[in-house]
Image (cartoon, rainbow, N blue to C red; front, side, top):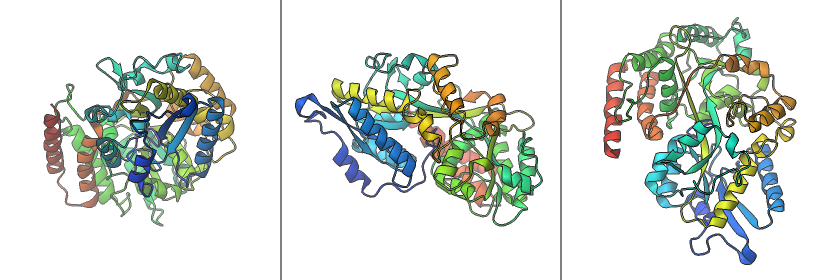
Length: 459
C-alpha cells in the first residue's frame, strides 16, 4: 500500500453516491463501450478528488490531451476517494460488479480479484507495441499480477518503506537530523525527547485501524526478520518472538514512555493530518508519504526526511514493499482493452507524461525528486529517461532521501490475501495501543487463530 499511492488502505470518505455514480459510469454489456463511428468509451477510476486541485487539474489535462491525440477514444473518469482504493469498498464493488472498465488495485488484491471473476486475462494484449516501455518494467512487478502464467493487471507504481521523520521537530528536541535512529531502541529514545516538547506532539505515531495497522505490523515484523505467513502461505507465522517484539516495542512507547500521543485507532488520513500539522516526529512510510503530507495535509517539504527502516539491534532484516496496478474488467471488447492500455501507457508508463511529467509538477505543490515510483528495471532505457527527468526537474531537497536510497533494506512482498490478514492484525495493533493492560501473547494467539481460519477457508 502506498500513498497513493504505493497501497495504503484509505481512511477517507467516499464520494457521495459512489455506488450510483459507479453504476452510471460502468460500461454496459450491451453496447460494449462503443459509440457511433467506431469510437470507444472506457471508464477509468482513481481520478483525484476535488480537494486535490492540482492533481485533478493534471488528470483532466491529461485526459483532454490524450483524447485529442486519440479522437476515437473517450475516457470517462471516476473518483473513488483520495486513496483510490478503500479495501472494504473495493471488495464491495468487486462483489457487485460495479468496478470501472479499467480499475485500480493493490498488488495484494490479485487473489480477491480473481476470486470475484471480474478481471480479464490480458497476457496476449500487453506487449511493447501496446506499451512502449513494457520491456523496461521490472519483471518482478509483472510477476506480482500474474497467476498461472496469465497477466491480469499492468503495474503502475512500486514502493518500499522506511522511517519518515520531521527534521524541524528533531532540531527542536536536540536530535541530529543527519543521524536518525537505526534501531527501535533509538526510535524509542528519540520519540521520548520529541514528545517532551509537549503541545500534543507524538514522538512516534502508528496506524491501528482500517487495515493500516496490519499493513504496518507486517513491515515492523519484517524489520525483525519475521514473516506473516509460513513459506507455503497456508498458516500464520507471526505468533513468535519477532511478533511479540513488534508489539512490545509499541506498548513500551505508548504506555511506558507516553511518546505516541493519546489519540489512537489512526487510519491513513488521520496520521498524515497530524504530520502535516507538525504533530508527529516519526512514523514508517514510503517516500510518497511526504507528498501526501504536503499536497493534501498542508505540511512543508523541507520539514521531512527519510531513513532506512530501523532494526531491533542493528540494521533492519527486511522491509515491506508493494505497489499497485490497473486491472481490466471482464467482457471488455478488444477495442476497449486496446484503448485502456493506450491510456495507461500515456498516464502511468511514459517518462515525461502523466505521473512522470516532472516539468509540469516542478512548479506545483507536488514533489519531484522522491525515490519513487520504482517501476523500471535497473539500467533499462525507461529508467534512465525517468531518472534524468527527475534530476533535471527536482523541486525538493533530494539530500533528505539520500540516506534512504544509499542504505537499501531487503524488500519483502506482502503476504497472500494481505488485506484480509491486515484486517485481523489491526486488532493486535489497536490492542497494545489502546489498552495499557493488554496481553500481547493473547492478542497474537487470537490473531493467529483468525488468520489460520481465513487461510483454511480459502484452500
